[in-house]
Length: 180
Image (cartoon, rainbow, N blue to C red; front, side):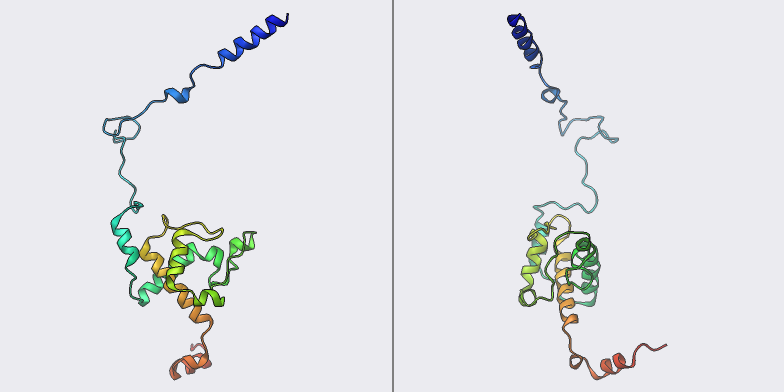
């Protein structure tokens, strides 16, 4: 009886040792036609806006810091609002909506340590991530990263600006309030 049970177990084990479907999956050759896509090609054109990780133009763009203009700051604000404000909030204090829902709080951009940090630090953190923040290298183009850095600097200045820093006309407008 024991022999039969052992023989049955061995037979069942051997029956399970057949080749898996994973070993014999169909493979497409890049240069031969296939019915996988509508155009019959295996190699597809990348979608518009896709970035290659080793694109030389992107590498050059990363080293070319753009001049700070109104357009660059407006673009930086737009990108900041999309990618950064969910965690860092709209003014950079680190109390974004994601944090309010339980994620760890990022440091405020207005901390003395980050005010003193150079622009390259912010660029590197956007590119490579830091702590629980993941890397945005594949999501944000280098020129857009520089625009975000410029906008973060503008946020830092705006939160620490003194009334005496404004021109006389700007101070007058500020104290009078909005005009109808």
